[in-house]
Length: 259
Image 1: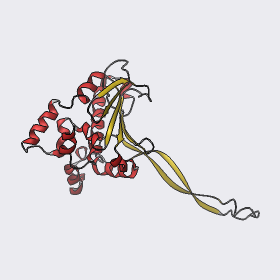
Image 2 (image 1 turned 60 degrees about the vertical axis):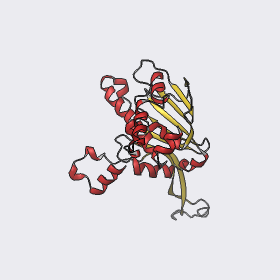
Image 3 (image 1 turned 45 degrees about the horizontal axis):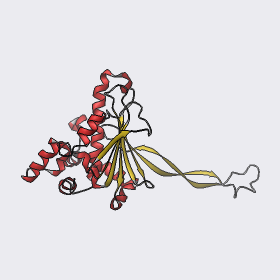
Image 4 (image 1 turned 45 degrees about the vertical axis):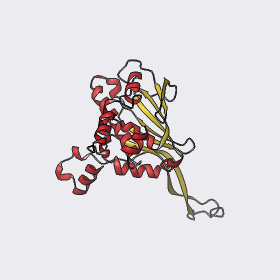
């Protein structure tokens, strides 16, 4: 695990790119499989991200295809699977581009750049009456899988919970997460929503100033802040590969190819 964390990534910010990309892949696979599954098709594919300062966690949730117990073991429980091995061999020969690590199937482990504990809650759409499961690992050294009774998925999906390291608590700032999403995930096809707190200002009658208001006089108003919490979509740009080449600017193209 130390090899993957310290050698394959030079910028820990990319953890969000890798994990959101994985979530998008899960949504894409579910969309494909939903062609013959009306219940699954009824749930719109989406990705939601939440930060929790009290718990010290960042959660990335998708309504994608989900995973079975066997898939949790095979996909997450075996670090030295063929893709990782191939990448390490290529890295040793100086032929691998660390920015393309996701193509080797090990992007999930980028989560350990910022987290010392990772939990994956998931429910598969490919197994009838599939149980909701929780995979837990401390720094990827070993893992446990158990039934999960937290908030259930409507049909299927995956909820990735990153318990951040002490030196990575800056990722609890939703504005930082939003900035990274705008940088790395703007062109993700599926809706990405970030849970955030926003402040709006509105005009209300000034009770104190109006206590001696005479009939016919216009009430005096004051501006007060109103704080709201909720999910806000952060990606509105249609992926450039789904747009006409004439509509894509050179700047957009360069941003996309270098992400």
